[in-house]
Image 1 (cartoon, helix red, strand yellow):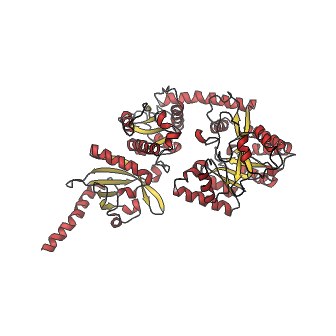
Image 2 (cartoon, one colour):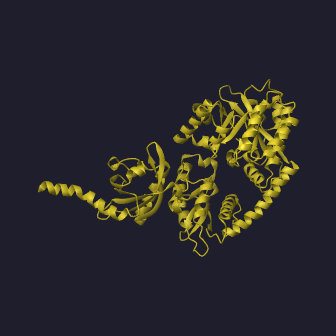
Image 3 (cartoon, helix red, strand yellow):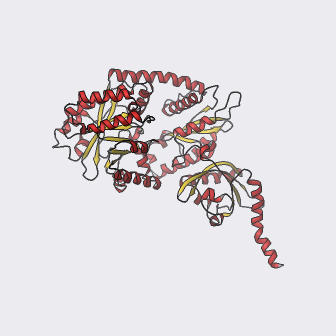
Length: 576
């Protein structure tokens, strides 16, 4: 009898969990019973699907150990809010799985009935096809955020349930100097956790350093977020700047909704005068149309008047420290790039209005003329848009230009660098053009490898000599072990297929050392030389016995250049 009572007592927690699970599993996949420190006491449900571990192996582990490292601060914030409110309904977190991609789940947190100090955590696994993909830091990319927010736009006749809230931190805490300190990094992490805590479905994106957008319900007050952000630091010297935009489509098409939201995010992020005044998506769409007409006019004038010039940045071989070649970057005369924020925007506008082919051909002619002036050992890499490469007419005109303009220039001195601002969809024309360029003796480079969806498809189809690993992708490898593994794999794969790898945006010796450790052969960035004008390179080249000398004379020759930055580069490292 005594043994039976002990068995009954031992089985009571399990039966209690079963009873609770019967209530919870109608809306959740996994149920955790945890103590005040979030140590797991009991687990029920699809634990293997969520964590990759059997329920018994999870007992006495901390819930913090099961979630992605970049989500742990968010979980801590949720616990603090739970202590205030007594319940958390919807918290989006990513759970780790051994040797597998993380699993996204929506968590709920409540007090466990009849067990003081213990909590009940429910986890509902979110199907990947229904959740926008978050980056390594837990924030969505801009495109994923726009796609996510677009799904929440109310339909005609429906009440507006959601809005996009845009938030900019005070200049004091946005400074690059503060962001690199331990205090600055901790503050940034706290801010991101607060935003994710209050965002609908984890919908948060970074607009720039210290500027964010997130999705909130119409009932939520952004002032709560503002107050919580100000609480994490004792002495903010200025208030947080916040604007919001109701997600009400007013009979707009999906593409128009995306255009309007994208314009709103850009307008807020660039609005240093705090004049953002749009009240609805239709207003944003009208403003975007006016802005597009202005950008198209500026872009057309730049191309037709040829008011652009070239600067050159060295690509260095790590083994020797010598210049391999220079990338040709585009800059614009002062005052002609009205409304165009950077080279990436210029290229996108040129692609949209059908003038990218003309620009690429003009740029090619300028590059060939420059090569004629430079010493015979100097090689230049010319960027060509993927949109241009898809045009059979462009391919024919490019080959004609090369035949007529490059009689005194060896083909091996002009490298062709294919960019992915506009991804290649139809490979017939590009494959034929690349084959002919390669047969002429031009080396082919793939720019920003790892940033676009088609990188490996390009590598498979084209006879590539150089692969340039996307600068942001490489930089994230400094702190992210998964990205380091991927970059190392790309470097090894490139070596095996006979390609040389280049790491972009290298600014420190530590970044250069990591690139060498990962097997990357070449580097490009401010550490080796900022972009220089052609005149500065010509002047420097007359003092150098040949191109095989180290790059340091070019660092001394570097001169400031105007205005527009390189594709996909943030303003702080735009020319690296």
